[in-house]
Each structure stands twice: as structure tokens, then as C-alpha cells.
Length: 380
Figure (cartoon, rainbow, N blue to C red):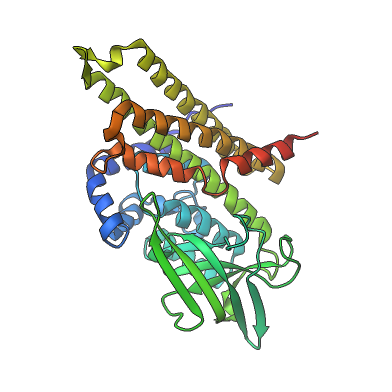
């Protein structure tokens, strides 16, 4: 299997890497995440206008440049390496994929806004009692004349404080935790004044998220995206797309953590020599390197399987998520230990990367969830 990038993909990686190295300052990013709006809107616009990465993985008929999963992997890995907090995965991967598969005028308009950088769209699919299972939907959508009325609640809707529109899952028929009967609605949160309550907060890894309460929220008929009750296959694909993307992001973050740890160990002196000269610490850094490379290989396989049939895709994604989850924990912990107490300080980048690597283990399904799913999919 050939993992070699073509010329266009190499240009994409090189251009994005140079942009982030010169224009994305980690200290400024942390300040915006902690005390400001949670992100840098000017960086998001530059992603769209200067680099075109928000549409790089979308087909041309959606306003993109005709890329696919490999372009998504390249972008996510570079963003992870720079610890970017702007919502690329939530908006340009998960939400954009859902909108592309749904079709229709509303979806097309939102896709245009995503590609141009003028609109941030996110997904609200997790509920208080669902345990992270997107198929377990108790939020209800009922017809009332020419409108839909939504009642229910969503939790930990990533990047929603930055968004203008949220895609909300609701059940229009069927039993709870059943694939049939789940529908997807576009909610313009900038204009919703009654029936929607949002609680915004900052997560442990300096991202922003929201809990949503919908109390007879009225939406026009056009808010329904795709067919009524048929959203689950698209949601399942979006969850796997998101899992593969955050795995690529984790690989980028782990490469940066490993490089910083090796550099620190060549500079830190103990007993009159660099601690990197101690064989036991060299072994630990080699173990970190092996975990990163295993993760990178697993991510490449998952990316190349995203367009395969459902079971093949799910198996490859779960294998990657489980591999990356284990590696992120190991690499992050080793990096902090090798840096000593200063590894968890706010002043050092390692601590921020460690928090992100910890959070990534649970996004789009935990390591344990994906181990169980992989076992079920490979069981004879």
C-alpha cells in the first residue's frame, strides 16, 4: 500500500506548515483560549482566504477543491502539531460532511459559508444519558403545521460557542437507541431567541463547548436536513470521519511532544552531562518514537479506508483510535515525566499538549469503546 503524497498534497502540507510556523503563536493562542473569545477569528479567515484548507477535503461541487480523506489527514496533523484551537475538525470535517451528504438549499448555503470562512457550523449529538452514543437520541422533533418543534437536551457540543449554526439530532420516529427515525436539523443559534438555552464553558484542553436545552424550539420546515428519520448512516460516517481526523491531529501533537522532549533531554544537565546521554532515558524516548510511528501507520490505514464499505471503515477507524489512544497516553505521560515538574506548568508547551492528548483519547469514542467495537467487528 502506497502512503506517498503527490505533489499537490506535498504543497498543501508545506504551505500550511509554513503558515503555522510564522503566524500561529502558541502564547497568543492560549491567551485567546483562556481569556478571550476562545479562538482567533482572523486565523480562521486566513485558513479560508489565504490557504483554502476549509474546503480542501471537499469535492468541487460543494465549493471545495476536490480533495478527500488524505487532504483531511494532512491538515489535521499539521494543526495538531501547532496545537491549533480553531474548530477545523468540528466544522470542516464533521459538519461539512453531514451537510454535503444531506444536500438541499440550506445545506448548500451553510457549506458555502464554511468554505469561505464566514460561517462556523458544529454538531450537537451527545445527550446527558446517552453515554456518548449518538444513536441514543431522546430529543424529540414533532410537526406542527409548517414547523418543527424540538424538545430535549444536548451536552458537550464542541465549538458551539464559536458557531452561528448547530446541527441538532432529534428523533422523529422509532424507539430510543434505534438507528431508524433519527433526523438532523439546522438551528441558527444567532436568531433563536425562545426555546433554546445554551451554557458555554471552556474544556480542560482550552477548547470551548456548550450544553443545550431545547424547550419547544420552533424551526421552519427547511431546517430538516436530508430525509426525515434517515440521518443515522450519515451520522455514523461523520463520527468515523471525526475519529480519523482527531487521530491525525494526535499524531501531529505527539510528533511535536517527542521532538521537544528529545531537545530538552539534550540540553538538561545532570551529573555534569546531558540527561539524554543516559541509556535508560534513551530507551524511553525510543519507546515514545515507536508509539508515534505505530499511530501514524494506523491513521494512514484508517484514512485510506474511510470510503470503504461500512464494516471495513469502522474496523480500520477503531483500530486507529485504539492505537492512538494508547500512544497519546504513553507519549504524553513520558514527556511530562522527562521534563520533570515543569512539564505541567503553563509556561511550557508540553503541559498544553498533554492536556490536548488526554482529551483526544475520548473524542468520537473512547479508547475502550473502540477496542470493544473492533473486537465485535472482527469476531468470527
